[in-house]
Amino acid sequence: MSKPLHNYLRAFRRGAGLTQKEVAFLLGLPTASQVSRLEHAVREPSLRTLLALELLFHAPVRRLFAGVQDEVERKTTGRARRLHARLTRASASPRLERKRETLRTLMESHGDVLDLPV
Picture 1 (tube, rainbow, N blue to C red):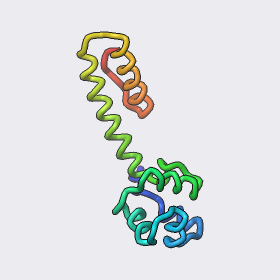
Picture 2: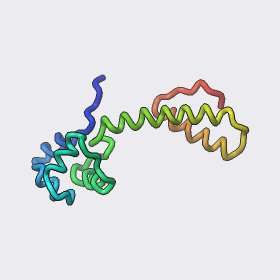
Picture 3: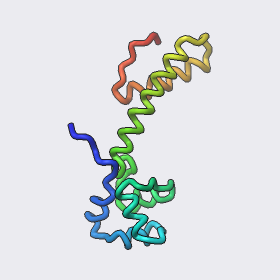
Picture 4: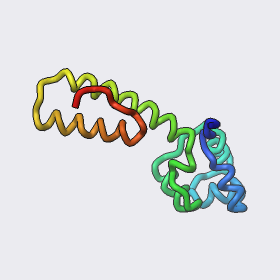
């Protein structure tokens, strides 16, 4: 399976028949060069820009930024595994068990099979 692009903004913009200048206007950005920087992953969009992109292209952020999504998922799941391992060594409590369950659910939903005690 090939690695996804950092983002697919250019493809969605072109598919919509819009210029960078028009997208800049719709996003409330002052110049088309800011759209270019987003498309080339030189600049990360603000939360407001992400929400506007979803609205404009009728696509969720995770699809518009598939490469970023994969990276975030991989890193977050790895950190969840390490935190779960640390919490497994801690004294049991209802709060601790809620934390461990949250982490187990996150990891399992992303294909990480735990071989750690429940």
